[in-house]
Image (cartoon, rainbow, N blue to C red):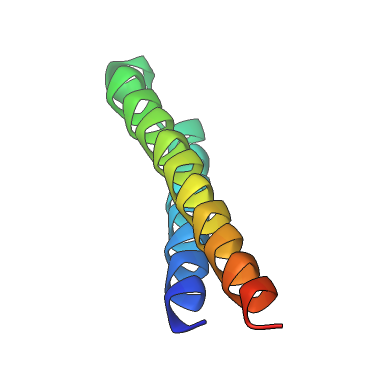
Amino acid sequence: MKNLLRIFMLFFMFIAAAVFFYLDNKHQDSSGLVVNNFLVLTFIIGCVIVLMKASDELKKEIEEAESSY
C-alpha cells in the first residue's frame, strides 16, 4: 500500500508541475513557447506512465488479496 501512495504522490506532483508550466506559458512571448510546450508534453507523458504503474500495482494488490482467501 505504501508503494501505491508513493505513486499517487508522484502523479499529483506531475499534475502540479504541468499546471505550473501551462500557466507560466501564458505569460511568455512566443520565443519560450516551444520549450514550455515540450515540458508540458513531457509531464503529461510522465503522468500517463505513473498511472500505468499505479494500475499495475493495484492489479498486483487485488491478485494478492484474492489469493489469500
